[in-house]
Amino acid sequence: MNYSFNIKSNTLILKLYDLDLNLNDIIKNIPFKFDYFILDLLEFNRISDIIMENFIKFGNITVSKESFFAISKLSFNEKFPVIPSVKEAFDLIELEEIQKKL
Image 1 (cartoon, rainbow, N blue to C red):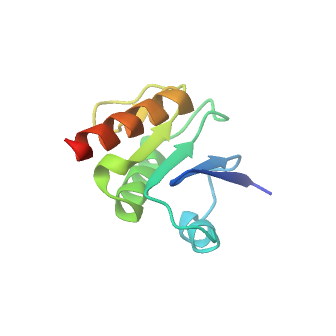
Image 2 (image 1 turned 135 degrees about the vertical axis):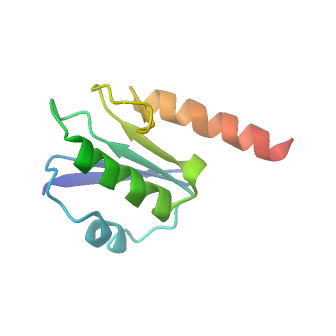
Image 3 (image 1 turned 90 degrees about the horizontal axis):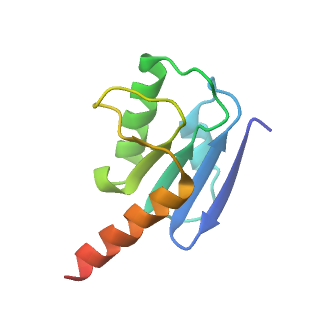
C-alpha cells in the first residue's frame, strides 16, 4: 500500500509513501468521520510546489481551513502552511479546541 492512515479521536492522519496518489479516492475509502486532517509527508525529500499546492487545496476542501495540517521536514514559502511534526499538529488542534470553547 502506498499510504497508511490512523484515526486518533476526531483526527485523520494520512501518511503518504507515493506522491502520485489520488487523495479523493483514499478519503472516500476512509470509513470514519473526522474533523481534523493531518497529511504526513515526512517520507519525502523533495515535493514540487505544484504538488504541495494541490495537497493544501485538497486539505482545505476536505475539512475547514483551520483543521488541515501538512507535515513535512521541507520548507516552503508562506502560502504553504507546513509544520514539522505530528505532535505539533496535535498541539495546534488542542489550541483550536480551546479557542472554540471560549
